[in-house]
Amino acid sequence: MKIAFIVQRYGAEILGGSEYHCRLIAERLAGRHQVEVLTTCARDYITWKNEYPEGADRIRGVTVRRFANDRTRDLASFNEYSDWIFHHDHSSADEEEWLRRQGPWCPGLLAYLDQHHRSYDALIFFTYLYAPTVLGLRVDPARSILVPTAHDEPAIRLGLYREVFSLPAGIAYNTNVERGFLRQLFSIGAKIEETVGCGVELPPSHLHDLPTSTPDTSTDGADQTDQPEREEADDNGALGSPLSARGAVFRRRHRLYGPFALYGGRIDPGKGCEELLDYFHSYAESDGDASLVLMGLKLMPIPDAPHLRFAGMLSEVERLEALEAATVVVVPSPFESLSLLALEAFSVGTPVLANARSDVLTDHCQRSNGGLYYSNRDEFRECLRLLIHNAPLRAAMGRQGRDYVRTHYRWDAIIGKYDRLMSGLQRSRPVGRNRRAGRRRGGGKT
Image (cartoon, rainbow, N blue to C red):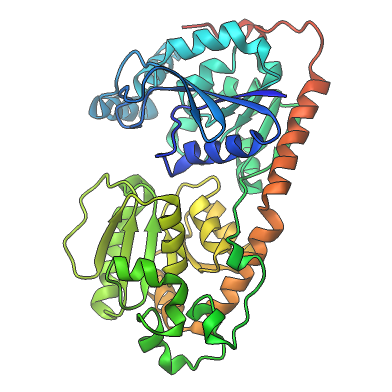
């Protein structure tokens, strides 16, 4: 099959969010299908400034076609307009203006899709929110699969998204939680639906449970259930101890000599990072036995404190090293449709501490028994204290998290679901269906 992915940004340097999710799926499908990505020249989702060169590129076996955005985003002005539109009566024209201001605004991408959509067997749109999806779905709904990556937020209740969820012939949900939420909110028009998610690569050392009795082969302190808990304060992450073998490189590079919690992703108030810093400061004041390491793109100030470390943007290899080295991985975002951070932590046997305001995260923790979750400051402190000091608990959670990923997020199962969706799309597409059906519903090319 020939497949087009349509996504707002795409690049090997983009290591989080729906764009990273899209790239992982595209690269895997490229091994058995002809895959192209239609995207913008933006690297930065704040301004959508054109930074990548326009035209065709080749990234890890995938052809990427980039189109220049017509405008950049003024975030302060957009936020002000969003606040107005979310809290006042408004027209459909106001919502179209909101979509334009949100960006990315890329008429060239839509023109290419309009001219070439018939050359593809499937059009896979990532993220319901942005203009390339909202307007692109109108071109050929019968060939279209939407990967919504949706959660409960003010924007999703705008009227323009009712059409978005009524148009595509197929929908690939990230979780059953997301699926239930969207089916309550919208009249779904898809003929084919799957709860798919994303595959997670188990590192070779974690393909089977490792022995816990031989220090040389232990993955970390979490798997040494026979270690006395009284030794945990010294051995949990101390360089030179058998408990830190798999995390030694990362710990040495960042001068980490004790237990630490790790966050990875956009360091942004919208991802729960302000609250995380506040809560961890309370923990550090009362216990003072752990650090918090932040890896990813910094979009907010980070206080200068002895218990905080900023690791910055890491390569995929370094990211894996960090996840393995961590005592616990914290996922503070209240808004998640899947959370690759949580799944990647599970995959290497590191337990998770998650924000209970995210139904998706609590569902992962409950179904996997691979993590705890908190709903306030006190719960955060108690859960973190328990995870840091209780090695047998971490051992059990580590094994259960790996089992959960093996059962539900193997790449062969995920790609098989995409193949079923695309095959079902072809079977369900009526011959001669008017490709502009979506436009007859009131849409129009802008």
